[in-house]
Amino acid sequence: MMYLDMMICLPDDILTNVDGAGMAVSLEARVTMSNHRLVEFAWRVPTEYKCRNIKEKWLLRQVLYRYVP
Image (cartoon, rainbow, N blue to C red; front, side, top):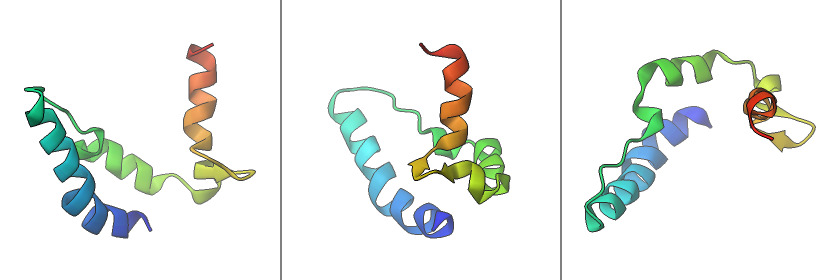
């Protein structure tokens, strides 16, 4: 699913919409997933850390609990 998202959904849908919305209001939008180091890290993380107990983004939530009330 990550591969399909990266190859189909991002370039043909999400990135196009973000770019269009940013240009409509003269805003420079930065897309996080264009950072190759972040993408490589996401591909290396085991699936059990990405989704646990039916909660998506489990690893991200655990990190944010330390910094966000």
